[in-house]
Length: 156
Image 1: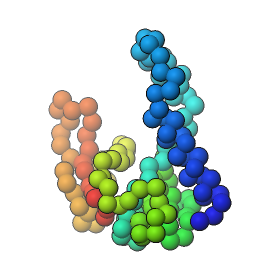
Image 2: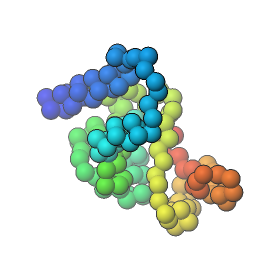
Image 3: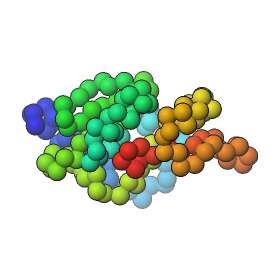
């Protein structure tokens, strides 16, 4: 593993640790929406890391089937797909080498929500590709959103 990648993982680890820390917690009143809006202005995007035993199937699913753009790749280890101008999904190969920070064997406690105005078109595409549809679209009714659920080759 290259020095650049090791530094990136170390930096990401520090960010995750500091983001989960309660250091500096105070007894001040709770944040208001104005506080949140001000803090969120500095966020320019996000990147979810997903771990796979069957890495090649995941790469095919996100790259060839869903058609997301491959913007960076660590050959045989990880690939970063761009899902929107500032949103990314990184697929990590859990080949047993211990290179990743997590394991594909850990519970899949994340859901990736892809937002679009083209729900019907994406659903028809998912059906045409025989994707693993867990829940079809439902009428909005009292729901705040409309959507459907598909799982990827890793169970995410």
